[in-house]
Amino acid sequence: MLSAEADAGMLKALIITGNEKFFSAGADLNEISRLTGPEAFGFSRAGQALMQAVDQFPVSVIAAIRGYCMGGGMDLALVCDYRIAAPNAVFGHRGATLGVMTGWGGTQRLPRLIGKARAMQVFLLAEMVKADEALRIGLVDRIAEDPIRTAMDFAGKFTLHAVET
Image (tube, rainbow, N blue to C red; front, side, top):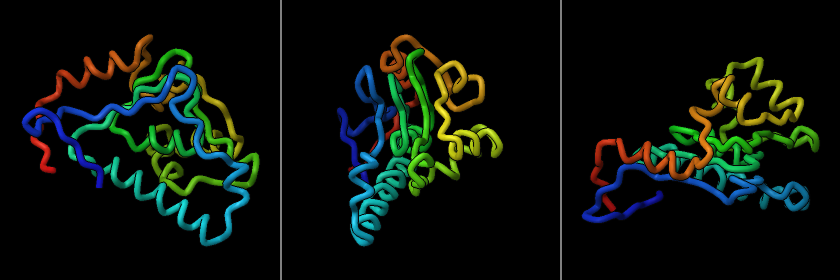
């Protein structure tokens, strides 16, 4: 389980971000294609454990997304409670182009957010979704020039929670 410590054990939110070009490009699909069955199973279980830990984190989790948010990185964004994207954010699950489908919960979470038909387009057509379209369809909650600052301001309005470590 993830743990968090702050002054006096108080934490309002966890913000997950990447760099200016990539929130997360996801796994290296060429590397994954070389995994043995047991290695692939272990990789899958590790990703599932991460998603479960984020899902069960004791405070709200905010994804501050800049640049590409692809594959497993998109799964990570989907498990967050809020998603704030920069105007340059691009979302997608390109695995279908290689015959690979996510096993980290994205196939369940995306349809809940944007509807089954639209989610099928994203997954099966390996469609890239730009920030403005992501906001329009409900994939993200907000677009901001500085998603990290916006996430910090947003989290600052939350009620404090004591986190046991």
